[in-house]
Image (cartoon, rainbow over all chains, first blue to last red; front, side):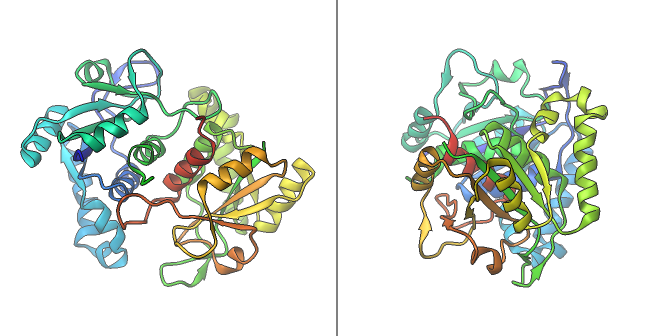
Length: 186
Length: 186
């Protein structure tokens, strides 16, 4: 089974007008996605931002729950946050996974937008079950990953769609659903 | 197909020590679950709290996105929040659904804890597809729904489990996964 990683990129992402921006790291993203990652056996969850003061913020969150007051108040948070790693950008994520697994990871981007040549959930589920290569699922904040990221990935995952036309899930909800579709026991 | 409703109860719920408490309404719960509800065709999402000042808070959130600055800044939030309704408690939810649909709803509780006589996801999915009765999925905040609620429901849904022993998803993530399992097109 492939080692599965997640990366939440805060740059380069799009804003609502399609401009490339750096988004802020959100406390709730770190917690919620860490808990989903831990539930579905993800090996590492990279929070990637080039803003060094936000590294310090995420470091403080982790420290609070890992060794501070939170570690005794709620041990399940400590457990979840043990999968969180800090990174600067996508290259830093790739280096981190390569260092940890010895292999260059396969990059799979997620997107709420439909398009040509999307990898289906059943196909990626089989690939993760059969492959020995580490895989990284990339998630964008703001209004999604910038083309500079999408142009570098090995595959683009099909969007999560429900029975309506509405496709504005939070990244926290989308990550949870995607992990469930790819890794829930059947 | 059954009309599907969600209710997020803030009382009576358990704290980490198993005591019955009233939890605070969280802004992110309202937004994330509303967006998931809207994606999966949920007819109404009840935010239930007996605390009247929190009704005012949720009312302000909705107003901001429905008619205030947020309504032009981000129309997709307005759309999602259109499914949100305020309620005092479970009885108030039942009355609301009955008023809207003309039928007393079937109550299905969610829980992260395994136990006897749990309804499986495939069975509930079929029931929702075939039934004409409105169904309400109940979610607890804090450490979960109190026994006083669980003792009143028609069915208890099996917990969401991944391939690990960790079962501490956020209620936002659990709601997203549960809706996807019950309502995603196949």
